[in-house]
Structure formats: structure tokens, C-alpha cells
Amino acid sequence: MGDLQIKALKKAYGDVKVLQGLDLEIQDGEFVVFVGPSGCGKSTLLRCIAGLEEITEGELRIGGKVMNDVPPSKRGIAMVFQSYALYPHMTVAENMAFGLKLAGASKQEIAAAVARAAAILQIEPLLERKPKALSGGQRQRVAIGRAIVRKPDVFLFDEPLSNLDAALRVQMRVELSKLHQELKTTMIYVTHDQVEAMTLAHRIVVINRGVIEQVGSPLELYHQPANLFVAGFIGSPRMNFLPCTLVSAEAGAAWVALSDGTRLHVAADARGLAEGTPLTLGIRPEHLVAATEPGPETAAGRIQVAEHLGDITYFYVDAPCCPETLTVKANPDNPLATGSSAFIAFPAEHGYLFGQDGRTLPRP
Ligand SMILES: Nc1ncnc2c1ncn2[C@@H]1O[C@H](COP(=O)(O)OP(=O)(O)OP(=O)(O)O)[C@@H](O)[C@H]1O
Image 1 (cartoon, rainbow, N blue to C red):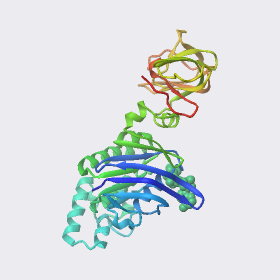
Image 2: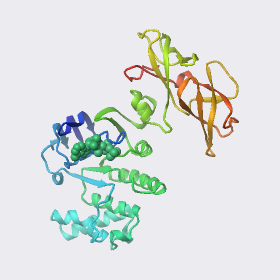
Image 3: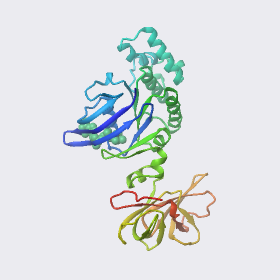
Image 4: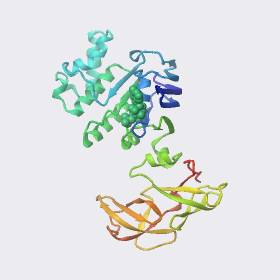
């Protein structure tokens, strides 16, 4: 069975603590994606699961068995790397067969497994070629095929698509999703590409500095980020953050003042915090509204750059209410242009307030 339990897992290289005591459960058949900024420890966690790195402290179970001291080949896992790691002197078929051959499988078994994987990945016409005669996307398919033939309980993917061009990434992403639907095997996938994480995962694990910040479905993380870090990490372009102070709080609603004095109403529960408490207001680009005329609760600004992408327009707005440039996602028929004055509205129901500890204040 491909279920995993990770308990208080720590990994250190000498004095460098890379993973700081992680707890995580993964169900059999789940597609789980680890995301986080460069150096946060996501590959290290994957390599600890694979057995390529020793676990410093804590416990890893796969299928109920403690795996801490079990060698990689006995863990029931297969790993696909960014670099493909194919043997250049072997054909595609030989590359795919190699692991089974080492494990002592019969010729018939090997042939059947290779044929099945080749059919799933639609690489039958390539079986007799050497890796150098394949495109990047085809090589990655062979690397995945090599993992499939081993019928692992758990697939581990370490940024498998990052060497491919944008169009091929999209295509392979869809294929990986289909592959998972077909095999229904647990998949654990590391990426720094948010779109990959959002589209592939049942659950995303957001890691930051060796700590899990939040675990949840893509839309949970998007709509209910637990803290400022997750709010800023999930979603592209990023959520806008504005420093503000608390003016007053009632059940499910707070008034805050931005740095230019603009007062806004936000659907968040700030009761219990003192007036004047510094907070951060977060609001996503698609929820800000840029208008030509002022309205109630609008802040004045100027459009620094308007990017017209056809189906949508992005406005980058400098406004005294915010030290950072605001990003506004607008309809293409919005008449504002580079250099225009703009009035930015912050619909209360779409705002998030973050406390000084970075945690999201409760929302109604
Ligand atoms: N063998 C090692 N010795 C010392 N430090 C290491 C070693 N391997 C990794 N690290 C450190 O551990 C941290 C986490 O590395 P890891 O590769 O897991 O990050 P990551 O989140 O996968 O980043 P990226 O997206 O850049 O690959 C980094 O700060 C890295 O420098």
C-alpha cells in the first residue's frame, strides 16, 4: 500500500537544520505536491522518503512499515528526476527493462511490463532508439516509463518537467494527471511551479525554511491561506499586501486605515486586538477594482504600466496607500491606460487581514 506517515522528521547536515520536525500523512492513491521557495527543503524531504538521504530524527512509514533504515530499492518507490538519468548506451526498451532485469524478473515479465508502460506513455515507436535520438519530452516519458515498469507503491517526482519548454510542460502536466487517474498510485511531486502544483495536486504541502506552513487542497490554500506566507506564495500574480492599522472591530468586520489615511472595511474578525494594532491587508489582483472616478473607500493612485494580454489586462499602480506597486487584474475593456490616475477599490469581502505574527485573522 502506498500510504505514508511522517512523524517529527528532522534532517540536518552537520549544524545546518534543513527539515525541522515535519508531520505529514499521505493516503494511498493521493497526488501530493511539495512546493516552497528555493532551498526550503522540499527535495530533501523527497530524498528522505526515497532513502537517498538519511533521516536524522523522527520516523517514516510507507505502507505501515518503518522505512528509516530500509535501502531505497526495498521501499516500494520509484523516483523520476529532472535530469532523466537515462543510460545513454542502452535503447529505450533496455532503459525501461533495466531495473526489472536487476531484480531478476523473467524475460516474459519484463517484456509485458515494458509493453504496458510504452502503451500508457505512447512511446512504442521509440523503443529501439537510444536516448540521444529523443527530444526532451520523449526522454522524460522514458524516465517515467522506467518508473512505471517497477509497479511501485509510491512514485516520487523531483521537478520532472523543469527542463522542458513551456508548451511541452503543459502537455506533460496533463499527461501526468491522466497517468495518475489510470494508475491510481500514490504520487509525491516536488516543484516550484505553482501552476503545476495547483493543477496536479489533490493536496499541496507548502514548505518554508524546513517547516510545513500549510497542507490543503489547491483551492483551500488559495481561498483560506493560514498565514501571510501561504497567501503570498499561492496565486500568480501574487496577492497584494498593504500595511494598515486597526481602527475598530466588530463581529466579522474590521475597519482599518491604510498609510495614506484611507479607511477601509474588511470582512475579518479583529476583535480582541487594540485599536492602532499594525496589521497587513491582503487582497488578490483579481479583486482590486481600478476606476476612473473616486468612490467610497477608494485610494488614489497612478497606473505605471498597463499590460494588455488580450483576454485580461494587468495594471501596475503606484499609490500613496501602499509602499509596493499594486497589481490589478482588470477586464480588457477597462479604459485606464499607462499614466492615468486611478481610484482603487478594495471590496471588503475579498480582503484578508494578517496579524503581526503573520497569521490570517478569522474570516466570516
Ligand atoms: N549535502 C548537503 N549539505 C549541506 N546542506 C545541504 C545539502 N543538501 C542540501 N543542503 C541544504 O539544504 C537546504 C534545502 O535544500 P533542498 O534541495 O531540499 O531545497 P529545495 O527546496 O528543493 O530547493 P530548490 O527548489 O532550489 O531545489 C538548502 O539550504 C541546501 O543548501
